[in-house]
Image 1 (cartoon, rainbow, N blue to C red):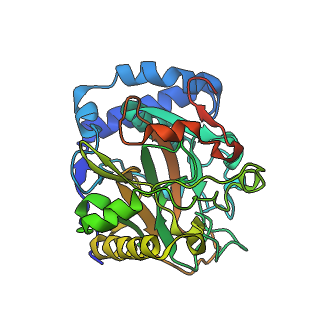
Image 2: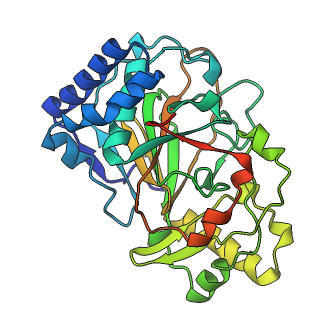
Length: 329
């Protein structure tokens, strides 16, 4: 797997300082990165940012479906120890929460989930004791299978942002674009069929208890810009599918593995992923739980007016999960 061939967009020192200064001012004025007042102030703060920042944060515009925003410098000695669970993070790295929210707002509308990390708009991704083998961001000892973020839900993010707080071991995020694959057209047609559902992942305990009947969904969609995707093999009941569909799905997995890249983020880097085009995962690693483990912050963004998903998704129940938007939370 190639190491970090992802497109890089660099912020010059002046633009990086502008962005971090705006974040620090918002935090000082509003008191907390989670306050409704700070969330409501994000659009106005973004209007005041200059053209250089806006140019760097234009939409993803290559078939890779991702880029690394580089130039924001973070000294992890000021962060304190990597927490052992997202719920114990508190205000650690709060200024970077606001940086990530500003970047998200320049690209669209930040969203959160009522059933995940207490409805926070910025999630903390850290390895947690007892979760080593799960297919969630809290795992460590297993390959985090490449997937579309929140694939079970029709209101899933269009963009996923991962900001690196700490990564002393160079642990890679994996990514693969459907638009870099060479899948046979017959397989594409198979995977456009709604054959099996995608179930909620282990980060959504309430959704897993939802009483509604899971509905089959397509894996691939044709759009004027190219193929888009909804994919989470770890939570897809493959044994319910017919032989032809399963064969096409396996070949899709093989193609995504063939074109997969490994992106090793440095502190301050922000990886921006088009969640309609790219699946992402993470290589396994051994967590030490000594305060120096990998630590990312994650934000999810919707982009209004995007025509990347079939209209039929609007009728899905989403397993009872409601998305919150930053302006109406």
